[in-house]
Amino acid sequence: MSDIRSFQDHISFIRSQTEKGLSKIPLRPNLTNYFYEPIKYVLKGKGKRLRPILVHLTGQIYNAHPDELMKAGIAVELLHNFSLVHDDIMDNDSKRHGQPSVHNKWDTSTAILAGDGLFALAQLSLVGLKPVAYQRFNEVALEVCEGQGIDKEYENNTSITMDEYIQMIGKKTASFLGLCAELGGLLGSASQKESNNLFQFGYNLGLAFQIKDDYLEIFGDEKIMGKSLGSDLDEQKQTVMTITARKKDFDNWSKFIQKKNNLSQYKDYFETSGIKKEVENLIESHVSKALSGLDLISKNRSNHLSEYAKLILNRDY
Image (cartoon, rainbow, N blue to C red; front, side):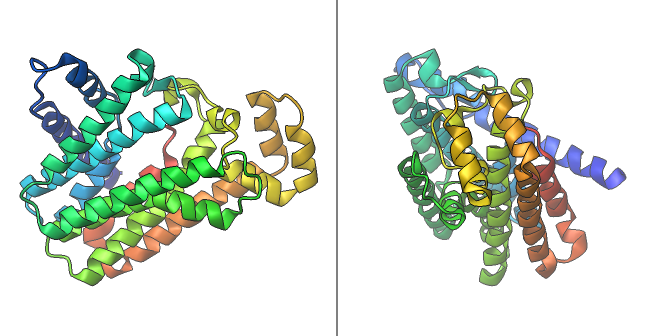
């Protein structure tokens, strides 16, 4: 119990330091309030800061300098928020973290510009870090955009397989969490093999994270999630829930979706057909795969990473 408490205190400290770092980003609203006000709004949002936390946890294992970890942590948080602002536009989501999304509070043009600004600020946060960290950051940033493009292409395409879905979320979500784990090693004393291992740890957690995200879109609590549920169904996105349903019993699923079902009816279908349990098992399997990759790191150094993996598995928003 004391180890769990210690971990919670540790990540709370990292989160609070990240918040301080975000608040110190030099914005210039006196030049243009139209541009900077939405950015300030985003940075004050109620994010979990899971990505910078992972940068710090892996960097601390390999004795990276705290200032460099802070710069990298701020950069990944800015990149994450850039992707959320644009994702909300593309999915027409009206809420984010319980607050109006940027395009809903202002308008689409303002939100696009704010997202672009967040990306530029992320680049500036990387100044002074090792060239390899800057390179990997931008390689993965491109992958995230590729994944988002594939996600849009897959909408309404009922031929998408589970392998194709995994490839898509691998780019859209898993590669980003992989980067966060890898960056800590790159900024510290990790060898190339160790950095690759850290990436795989984060990558497998990222797969679990996105699958859990799809799951919570159906079975989450709207108040805790801070947004309306079921938008993936409305947008006819190909998620782990719908792909599993189609694979498990194509005929029954085809008949079911011909009706005008509400979210409660979808929940009942996924539960009674065993799909809910299958997806829960899939999430656990990817977390287990991530944890098995920690064997190359001594147990006393990887304890916090194990706790972080449990945090991903058990999250409810």
